[in-house]
Amino acid sequence: MIDTCHLSCLLTCRITMVICRFRSLLSLSKTNSFFLSSPSTSFSIRTFSSSHIPQHLQNVGFVGLGNMGSRMAINLVKAGYKLTVYDINSDVLKKFSQMGVSTKKTPYEVSEASDVIITMLPSSAHVIDVYTGPNGLLHGGKLLRPWLFIDSSTIDPQTSTNLSATISKYTLKEKKGDQETPAKLEAPVSGSVIAAEAGTLTFMVGGSEEAFVAAKSIFFSMGKSAIYCGGAGSGSAAKICNNLAMAVSMLGVSEALALGQSLGVSATTLTKIFNCSSARCWSSDAYNPVPGVMEGVPSSRDYNGGFSSKLMVKDLNLAVESAKHAECKYPLTSQAQKIYSELCNGGHEARDFSCAFRHYYSGMDENQDH
Image (tube, rainbow, N blue to C red; front, side, top):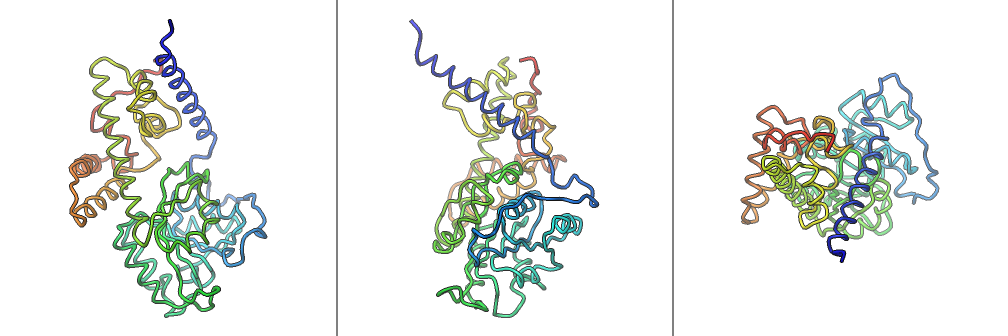
């Protein structure tokens, strides 16, 4: 008789591998980097009419046009929002200008032209400077035009909370209904550069629930999901916890696959087993760290692109500090922090964090014939 449990596992595994291959083909069909074109190239983007967008949401300012921010901003343009942007990189501003997007010389100038502000910046220090520094978003005295500030940077919850408190002390130049003071949401994201380009990010949102509801159309112009986490600081806390779990998961999968290779079991075979059993996770079925097992992921291109080990160290540092502040145990966080710090010190800081398989565990590339 046929073992129905075994048959079900085989079918599930086959379906999983087909889905992963389909995802890979989709990702390969996309442009790898918005910044590959020369500065002289002219761009045209197909956009939708802005007639469906409420007037108080139409004028959006965007500060921080890096790998993630640039793609998020482009999706807002495609959705019909009137965008005004700023970045310290003048070449990036020139590219947006060639697309017909208004560019400014300072964050303050963006603030003066916008009703909603979105920031996507590397660290807490950058966020503080862009908001409160000279020519920052809050530079113009106690009266502000934007009624809503959305910070999608991954920073510590305390900075997010303090910034929300600071913004609440300002007054709107023009009331928005009954609202007299600007609102601020933190909305860090989960998803890679590919997800930012495809508009499939997940937003973890903290702050006023009323502001979250009002801004949903903006989130869904850049992502597939927006989850309300609670008051100020909760979105940043959720992102730190998510990336902590992601780091530990990747190290666990990498360690198991490297051990399997040493014991004579190929990474392809183990991946099939993981993906139709209790070990299945994102690190195995969507972002496999072994070169040669999956197409369209950083491991298939020498760990270039993706989420850098340097950024993972930054997020793990935030997790450690948060755990200390909350008086929680963090042995796995601490170990992951040490491993990724070692990778960065070894010259791998720019490589995707899945490079731990090769550069920490000394795992081997998979034979393409498997």
